[in-house]
Amino acid sequence: MSKTAIVTGASSGIGYHITHHLLENGYNVFGVSRNVTQELFDQPGWHPVPCDLSVPDEVQRCCDELKKQTGNAVDVLVLCAGKAWFGPHETHRPEQINEMVDLNFKAPLLMINALLRSVRDSEGHIIGIGSVSGNTRSPQGGVYAATKAGFHHFLDLLFDETRKQGVKVTRIVPDLTRTLFYDHLNFEPESHPEAHIDPEEIARAVDYILQSPQAVITEIELRPQKLQIRKK
Image 1 (cartoon, rainbow, N blue to C red):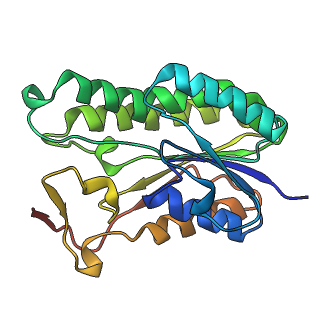
Image 2: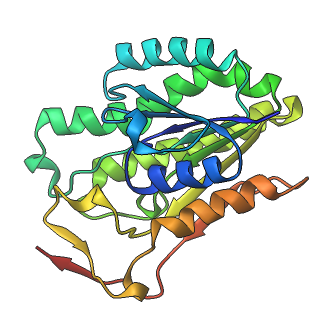
């Protein structure tokens, strides 16, 4: 019987590559994103669930729909959707701050709150895609770093809370990853292969985590060999 996975941010970047790997490994994957479509993956087991995760009421509606579609059986929940704005704090518009808090922090906590019983009943795995910004000081990225730091801390607490119930919790902490994440920003990673992480590497990290038979890998941090960015 196929296992069931839910992936947020499945329409592009890291979430897209993780979804592809899960489908290749035989999972039924419910992909959540604003722009997700049936045509995105021409593979059995693919189930798109459109949702704007930056809107709390939409998150609750989405979770209700996911519980119906999965039959309350979730083996893997991957929380990948995110957004960042960088610059001095006083230059952020209120809507940018709200979007980062709602999408990076509030949405994953609401989804875990709604779906935790479904994961627990399957003795499943929750995987959160964090950021090195949440583990270090991030000049001109304070709000983004704060949302990721809070998410990291919550995942640690969640594992302590649920480990005796069979729930596994892991955070993956990537550094500069070459995706559409940087399209609206004024900088991006250098194109040299050693200056950024390929999202395929993160998808392979998910494969490795899910193949660990007994030990729970609570954190994987991925960094490029070189730290190089360029202004657009």
